[in-house]
Image 1 (tube, each protein chain N blue to C red):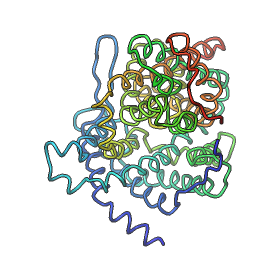
Image 2 (cartoon, one colour; image 1 turned 60 degrees about the horizontal axis):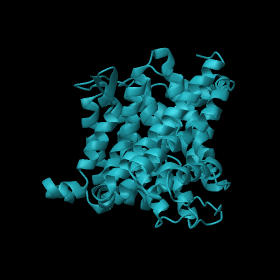
Image 3 (spheres, helix red, strand yellow; image 1 turned 45 degrees about the horizontal axis):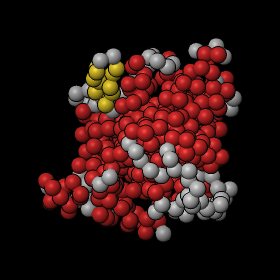
Image 4 (cartoon, rainbow over the protein chains, first blue to last red; image 1 turned 180 degrees about the vertical axis):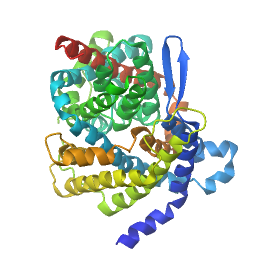
Amino acid sequence: MSENVWAIRAKEYKLHLVVLAICIVSELIGLQRFKVGPATILLIPFVFAFIIGVFLTPAITDKYWKGFKKVINEFEQKAATPCITIGITLFIAKLAVLVGANMDKIIKGGPAMILQEFGNLGTILVAVPFAVLVLRMGRETLGASFSVCREPSLALAAELWGLESAAGIGAMGVYIVGTVFGAVFFSIMGSIMASLNIFHPYALGMASGVGSASMMTAAATTVKELVPKDQQELVVAYAAASNLITTATGMYMSLYMGIPMTKWIYKKLSKDDLADLKEEAL
Amino acid sequence: MSEEKKATFSILDWSSFLIIFAAISIISQVFNVWNLLGVSTANTANVWLMIKGYAVLYVGTVIGLICAKYIRIGWPAVIWVSLVLIVVSLPWLPTHKFVTEVTAPVALLPMASPILAYAGLAIARKELQLFKESGWKIIIVACLTFFGSYFFSALIAEIVLKAMGQI
């Protein structure tokens, strides 16, 4: 059995070697800082790693380097997908050590930690009005706005509306945008927010826990680089703890608060009363 | 709601990949220290210290995965892995000193590089297609959704932390 597993790993050798090469190049470039007006934008090596990765996918190398498809093709791409989920568990392990080691401080920050979970409903306040009033979008708005739509929320949307319905397509869209751009977007947003000094780094740390390990990591570790040394560890610990709470409770938050609120605001703003919206009873 | 979430992953499959992942990640940490153009965020280039740190994290992770596989109460693997490592590093337990000290050389940022490299490589033709078609509206809404969650959570956290005199 164990031979079997290593035989599978050996077949994927091209993928892992390419990832190693990408990482070496990205780390050699190192962390870059740019000043844009009052804000600082940090570009972290993982942002480079991601971008290089995208440029080496077959859909893109088709256009400039057909030969590279011998190295990375559909087989390698398929093998890369589970690697994200698995690799992240080791990363989570390191974060969990920070959470555990700082548990006394996290408990002290508990009330803030729990109440800021409701801030995740802020997606609705920002996204629904813009989608309906400015972009003139239809029921895609429902699926696209009720949460940042990671796996549990996508599963919820799939069961409630079905992914072929307009609302389901909206959810699927945000899920894909999050998968593709989420980490890069959160990293850059994190660096801008931290450098503008509107919020305390601890508040930004807690806010990073939006229910996705990669988005949380991107936001929190970027903020960490911009704050005083003695606050760095706690920023990441707050982020990881908040993300755990969101992961555990996010689906219920969406089901009982997020989706009803989204529908209510959507009905107020658009002429659609949702009378014929098909929903499965859960 | 379908609540029978079966843990379908294979522990051997996951733990064998995690060894490769840890190796790539350690090399990333070393090159992070040697970076040519930017700022370094790694803690050390000492490979032996790093191997010890990764080994402890690895053992904790695999224990978490075993729990996720055999204790079927519907918790995802990340929750179990977190739980195992949170408990052993709690300040009130005797394991605290060992776990925090031995994992200290492991820096967070270089650990994320291989994850994002795999994520980049995994992006499929059909996902790129979505953006070509009616994509731009959904990209804007998605960004607003991300911003909304982050901004309002930060706002509430700021208010509560201030009100309690913690910042």
